[in-house]
Length: 392
Ligand code: ATP
Ligand code: MG
Ligand code: MG
Image 1 (tube, rainbow, N blue to C red):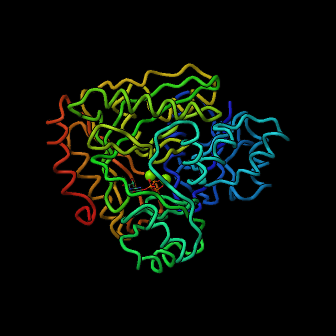
Image 2 (spheres, rainbow, N blue to C red):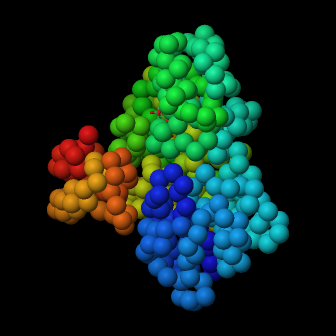
Image 3 (cartoon, rainbow, N blue to C red):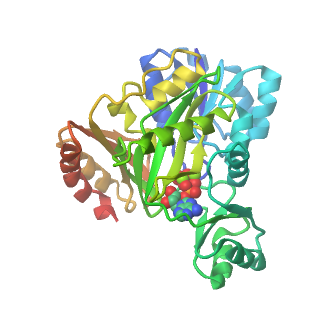
């Protein structure tokens, strides 16, 4: 069985999601062919297909010829990023009859955040107020009158790690906001005064059945996911149930199989809004490799290959995931942190094999498990103080 995976990250130059997927595939004797412009992209380092004629492909996911070459080598095609050329995928789906998961129609809706939010609202999913905006000072100033201040101006496309967001705090910010977001297509969201950010991974089968992972708390720093705590602790037990129900209902509205990450805002009164959905493995689900009975990567594979899904239950009482984010170009800082992490009980180190380090770049993560929240917090303490650049 073959799977093709695009590990092309036009914006981040990464590939850790494909890498962890390939590692998971190796356990099931599933060959994975990777298309990536980097010869030694993170995912390509994991395995070479057993049949040499199925070697990884060097090339861009935006090159239709390369994508067609890839499609000829596989039974199933999946992607690890939503910022892909959907038109080419749609052509391949009809011309070559290959299964593509999630469906290109799903990726098309999700990759434009304004279309995604409109879809969710039309399907009855809870989203906060948002409105279209033109890339003009006047239009942005009009948003302030409609939504109040502050509000969040967002790029509709190609956003990641908050790099398509601009907080408009006063009417006079419109000029700076336009400068920051350039000529990108925009929309605006009302400011959501959430108390916590939460997330649920949901896996969808080819038959449209869904199964969710436990709800987790996500903590962002500089707009990048910093920590994840599993499971979410809340004095109100209905929050966990509601968030899983909302996430499952949202994923049911999309076509095609695979894992989805549903990011949500939890409000003071317990109500929940969906922030955004990723049609792929997600940073908030990495903890599941060590903490759940089946990882998000394995369940993604099982879903796209029409194999039985694995249990999503936690197998430890408490877990946390901490991202290893570059503080500078120093690779030594990453190695030093990893050496410390190896001395912490219950800690598993994941390094992504990226050839160079940059400030703000995801270089790896660690998962810490324990028999209680107190144990996990105590184990996290030395890790937090050993982070590259002091964690700033
Ligand atoms: P990701 O790396 O998760 O794909 P992204 O670039 O797509 O990030 P968002 O998830 O839209 O960006 O926003 C990044 C962060 O900004 C959110 O996790 C949240 O902390 C904050 N944020 C986003 N929208 C709002 C809002 N309407 N009100 C308040 N805070 C918000
Ligand atoms: Mg996003
Ligand atoms: Mg996000």
